Figure 1 (cartoon, rainbow, N blue to C red):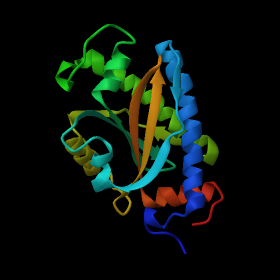
Figure 2: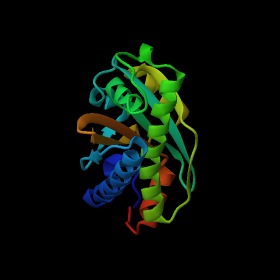
Figure 3: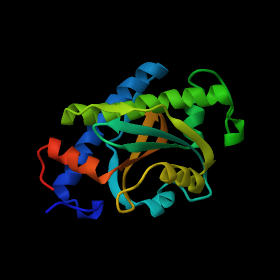
Length: 207
């Protein structure tokens, strides 16, 4: 019998998702290190299934200011990868290219945002490419749509563009060390139910 929401996934399914996360994080560290010309280490990410309505609690609260970068996934699977960037992360990335003090989102201009978006593209692509390689699927990434707003509003924008699965999403929690500085990064993977079934079918795991 097939599952109808993410709550029905068992330990084997979660192990597969963690393995994809591990490979993706390693590839992301290598790509970011080359781009920023500094050492980048990423701890093994924590991958959880959480209710979309509770995501804000994991991101520091609904009123916290963040940059949300939503990249659509299309072709063999349909969904979105939402990369949530804290101002501290944005500041570290921007200062890898030129010195600038970033305290709030109001300090970020178009050039600053461009640097952050490029970094997000690399990080997201590392995960998606790992997923595609393991499943032998073609997955296209659409250009990121950015939202500079509170956590609550960023999540609303993303949920308006893409359907979640039974209100459950895959939450990827990362700790990065960029040039010795610890930075937190969060990704939220939202897949259509049929895409999730196709993913596990390609991996040879029953559902």
